[in-house]
Image 1 (cartoon, rainbow, N blue to C red):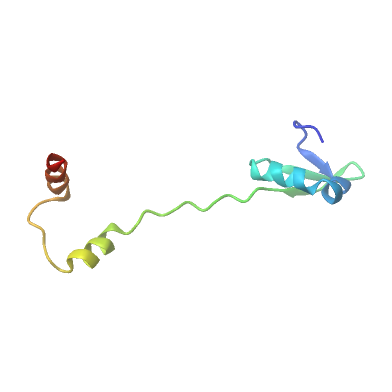
Image 2 (tube, one colour):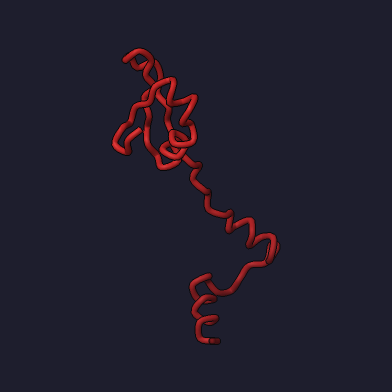
Length: 83
């Protein structure tokens, strides 16, 4: 199998699966051929996007129902001056 090939035969799947797996991990789409006809496509799995943490829930866990007198930006500015 060459590096520019984006097709593989059924035989390649049997005997060179590690190479095909490496291509899939790099994000390549691979067409599977049997007797010169495309019979399938292998697509890499797209990783799930990580969600942002729920900052409001974290704040409530730390502070409870307390209301802060200063905004988050003011709080960060004070902490910056401290160092």
